[in-house]
Amino acid sequence: SNTGGTEISGATTSTYTPSNSLGKKYYYVTITGTCGTETSNVAEINIKSTPSSPVIGSQIYCSSANKTLGDLSSIAGLKWYDALVGGNVLLSTTKLQTGKYYASVVQDGCESGRTEVDVTITASPVKPEVEVLSAANCTSVTRFKLKNEETGVTYELENGGAVEIDATTKELKNLGVGKYKLIAKHGTCSSEA
Image 1 (tube, one colour):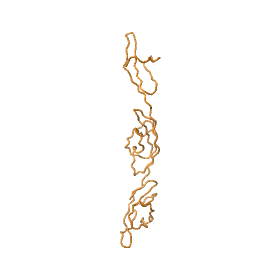
Image 2 (image 1 turned 135 degrees about the vertical axis):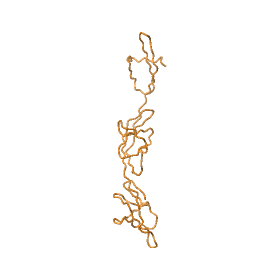
Image 3 (image 1 turned 180 degrees about the vertical axis):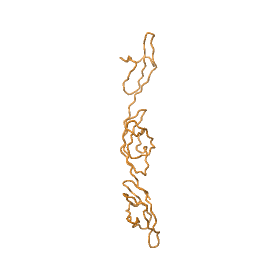
Image 4 (image 1 turned 60 degrees about the vertical axis):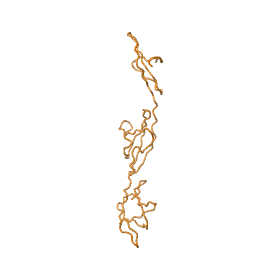
């Protein structure tokens, strides 16, 4: 209502800055002059608290994981940017690349400060490809060759066994009778044949 209330002492100019205490407050203006008194409509001011900046640690992913911004955190109300100040808003479906991303939280219409999130994408090894050198027969097992060996990549079997690869022929050595799955590993990243 635009009647009653408490007059604000000293508020006699065309501008007024209310306190920043939280909650709803209502204001109206009464102007008295030689032609009478005019009263404005009521203005509602609702001061809300600013949410805390999100806490999101640095992340490392393998390139084969195809992670997006949405995978970095499950905090509700996240808003992603490409800069600490200003910049562009990014969709949560943006595919991650090595670099810095900035997140804020939006709650009840208020936005927090931004948090820097470092992301590192480690290259996954190429999926190993094998070629049959000779098929199994009564006296020997099938012989295989690795077609795409990569430098800096180790190869092992799914059960954790080591694989010996001939340096010249790239033949997989010492495989007995059985089924095998070859795994290429580079750091914590892997690809399976």
